[in-house]
Amino acid sequence: MKRVALLCLVSIGILTARARPAAAHGAEMFLGSTASGGGALALSYEFTDTVFVTPDVSLGGMTLYSSLFPGIEWLQSDQAPLYALPPGTPFSLQIMSLDPGAEVKVGSTTLTTAGQSAFVANTTNVPGDHFHPQWELLLPTGVTGNYSVSFRLTTTSPSYTSSATYTLVISNLAAPTDTPTPTQTAIATATPTTAATTTPTSTPAQGACPPVALPGCRTASKSTLVIRDGGGSAVLRWRGTWGTVAARDDFGNPQLSATYLLCVYAGTEKALIDAGGAPVPADGTKWRATGKGWRYKDPQGTAAGVTKIALTLARPNGSKASLSGSGSALPVPPLPIAAPYFPLTMQLSNSDTTPICWESVFAVSSVTQNSSGRLKATIK
Image 1 (cartoon, one colour):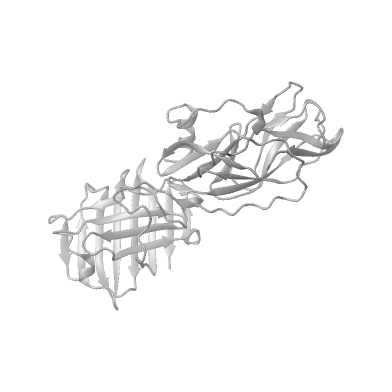
Image 2 (cartoon, helix red, strand yellow):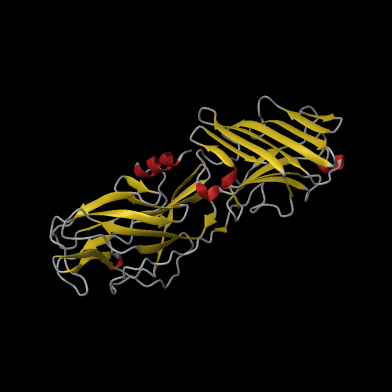
């Protein structure tokens, strides 16, 4: 399911995971200017404090986290070192840089890339009047970490100039129980704040697949992955060549005992996308032995949507494997695949010969197409 579907479900209240807190003005950024009647827009806030977000909804292997705090409250009177803006001063929020997975929602506009901006509000003379951007993370389910967003405030008013660049760190890690309430602090300087490094960690759910990718798998020297939209469900084709010395026994016996399992992992931490994976149990009718390996055929895709598997010994001493399938049960991410999923790891193992396993690791650079209708990635 695409990102827009996640947001639609949240907006109509079907899958909200928490109630929105009431306004707490101690958690606001205060807006003013650096000079009376002019100067640059400026914010007063403790930017060293982390913004902790909590999950709104999880669908299709992605989780949306958000927080309405801190908001932006414009001063009604001068409070050194800031000066109040006159009513009717327009201002917008512009993204300067952000880590993959981080985003800011201003009204109905979601800002996801550097350079994007959205109109926030016109200042008023109503005490306590403020606006709440929504600070968000959109990540593969199970991935956690700290993500930075750098932004500035701009204005079309001829009396004022744009603010300095500010950086907030957004985190979906557990918030400390003694986190202090942000308070007003000195104005930030015009020097941009150094962005924090993204350090996602994996906390996926348990299931048929290991919670993190199996170590030591045979890594493909050549591989192709194609995922396309089959009219509401995924169509998958994955194949690869492994140069590691292989023997027929490495494949186990899928007619009698070997259950094959496809698992898909996201990002550098290899966080599990779908706990169930795609298990293909041993079957004496759907599997058949070939001269150099095994073939599986099930046009109905009764095992998690998998329709074909081919396992073949290859010259000089390697192996080849391919897997095809279709349906909503396949453990693949939604299209287009978001940046936090990469590198995307496909892993195939069987219950007879574990820990022998085969994997392809698709970096962003391997992707030649990534749209709402089709993904193609190639390792050469």
